[in-house]
Image 1 (cartoon, rainbow, N blue to C red):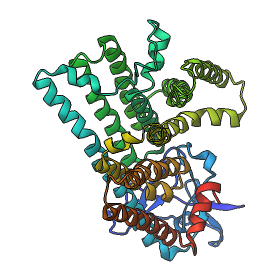
Image 2: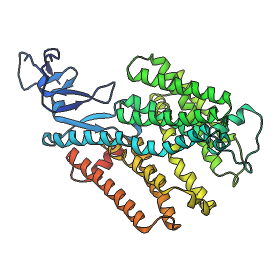
Image 3: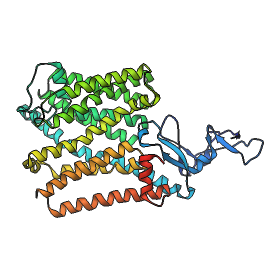
Image 4: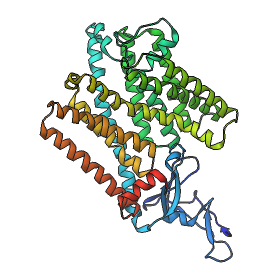
Length: 430
């Protein structure tokens, strides 16, 4: 298609009170430019030719973001352009802003979930009660189920099963959202890393964790945070970032099958074989990708593994909890209804944003945690007569209403006639 070029003067642009409209960028999720900041030098020729702003068409000004397929959730900028009704741009921008705020607000319930443990640990340390810190499950080790071998490999897999699994998941998802430039989600994952590390530091001070393990964890956490934020500000070498992605890819692949296997011990024999096999496969896959032995689709798949394994690790938490509830129904009474409600609220606040930006992986993880971890455990508590009928019905009504509002507002923002269109785009990308 023939086109005439024109120049956009950014330096001469005056501050505008017009609303900001989102444009796609090949390196980040979006850029914002005010419409009145565009100063055009018209070219000679027919004015009905398509004009370009840099490498975008003028039609971009009147188009909205639309998704790619679910398999492309991991790409830094997951949006195409699709024609849209320009009259709905105001609703689109309002919902864009609100969903970002909801995502940021999720920090509050998540922090409330971790704060009681941090405060309790601090009180025990100040009181000199170091023995109490041994009850904190940084390392899942059931005496009747595990035979402790003095081997580095076995200790490594034990480490994968407790609090460190969550730490690995947070670091992996932090890297995922750093690439997507989702600021609010970055804060959520950073808070997860920092709060978990604070608890681990308290355990080390209380001598509930061996110092060599704590030093190793500290190095990984510090390295992960520094690399992620250097990458966010475009100050990191591409090769170094890919190496970090390789590390979390192998780590996630190793942890996931081992954690799943360990959930069902002692129903099945205790073994480190699943994690060992996954580790070997992960290293081999990463090496093949680096050596160019995989197709483009294969390399793309490998780069998406870390985000998906982190999501699946968190998704496995409610399955593990429900399995425990099934084996030991009396344990249900030990669950905190307020904690489950906070988990439901925190993850539920992320659902509208994940749906709005058409991030299938994020939407899947948040929805799963909301329904099966938060609400699912509330159902168990209600069936066991631990919580009142009024509490359960209020939580149910709130959840259903919230999901309904998210679908309704997303439908309006995109100018669709049915929320099913939003879900179809989320999964299939069109």
